[in-house]
Amino acid sequence: MKQKNEIVHDAEYYILEARHGEVWAAEDDELDARLEALRKKYGTPPNIVHIMWDDTAFGEVGIPHLQKTRGFETPNINRLAAEGIFFCRMYTEPSCTPSRAAVMTGRHAVRSGMYNVAFPYEYGGLDAEEVTMGTVLSSVGYATAFYGKWHLGDTEESYATNHGFDEALFTPYNQVPSIYTPAAENMGAITGMFPEMFPADPYDLDRGWEPRGYVWALEGRKEGTVREWGHPPDHEDYLKIDPECERRTLAFIRTNAKGGKPFYVAYWPQLASFAGFKEKQTVSRALLQEGLVRLDRFIGELRDELETLGIAENTLVVLMADNGPMVHNGPPGMVETIYRGGKSDYWEGGVRVAAFAWWPGMIAPGQIVGDMIHETDLFTTFARLGGALDHVPTDRIIDGVDQTSLLLNGDTFSRRDYNFIYTGPVLAATVKGRFKRVWVGESPGLTGAAFYDLYNDPREVQPKMLPLFPTKGMFNIMKARHEIWKQKYPDRKPARDFPLKGIENARPETLAASQIRVDLEKIPFDPREFIRNLPDWENIDVGWGAGEK
Image (tube, rainbow, N blue to C red; front, side, top):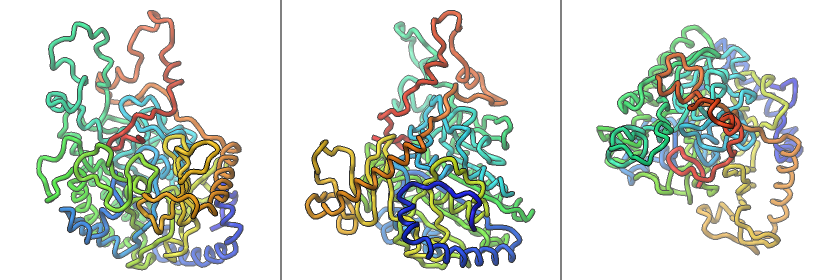
């Protein structure tokens, strides 16, 4: 479906389009005919369900052979992968907040300034000028909902309800606050959160600076006020977030299916708590695996519901991880599995993830797709499927390319063979087809062994210099095109403000967090000035959902 105004892509895309544009145009005509036939059959454009969870290595789910050696099973996810597309080269950003921003906006996180990982308090979040998938699909009549780990900041303008979602139950932060509890303080898992549990420190002159006003989750409707959901630091309430999100996801699907309205729902589960589950369900007993088997149960329920409602053939389901495993000082169960590295890394293990798509009747079963796809591509592809390309903004770079042909035609039909990998604001590596160049750590003026052949060295442990010299100039020109295009379309900044404003039922601790802590007349500066000038990049975030190393 041709949009009225052309989307602005990264420079590298236009090289491919110049070479393949005529073939792609012919493919698009055929795809439009198939989608129109489906729309006539069901009376609506297709429904879209996107499920994305944390920190899972490629190969950890979807391959039962490997799971036999890992002490857990996900039969429902594995079945869905076997009956649809198994993506072998789904790339993401290297950590939680950047990955979620990329999916929601179709843009590398560096473009929106969302490359820091949000903790209480972040004093920042997704800017109101960023256009999300919720906004794009709402514009053409989709019902939209978000449930789970939003993790895109704690400013009021960053709330999911202010980014196109009709309804949302969302967490501003990651899973780390699950141990912001008195029990965790008592056992030494955290320090300094609850000073009242201990003898008073006579040298502590500023009691109350701790982030006591964090929230488990917020809920609300589009552009309305939000309410706190759950009561921190009650850990039992934290563990109820995912079950409640799953209940709401199924209810949202039922309501709109019965009303004949197309829907887009993103369920991004918390998946786990650092404090763990009371009952273990796997031989592995590890944090990630315990979360995955619980998610697997829900995937089975979701599939049953879509089939019972008779809408499975008009519903695209995409399952994926947001980035690689937390292998740097992470909890048990976080392992590389196949590729080197993990969360926070520019190595393949940090940005190549488990991902699958299922759409009975539209996606042929049993597909193993070796093409490159990037999570930003979901933004443009979902817009195409929903007939919403005219609502994708054209005043900024959209990194996501339309991958409808890959979904419906299968292997070798991708429209991408490149990827730019950022860690924070730093361009750390570039991938082109089978080759990869690592930019960070190179000596100025010299050519080091910073080149990799991903076919013959998939774990990136044998960097080459002389054999891969033919790629040197090509990577240089790719980088130049990318960076010059960025000058024309500059990166944005995140929204900055006091956190957790506009909460209808804010607890006293939360209300205090949203305000200046001292009398302005007694200090010679305005604290808001410091918030507006917080550094855009902090190279300190390491942890589950906790960013680059």
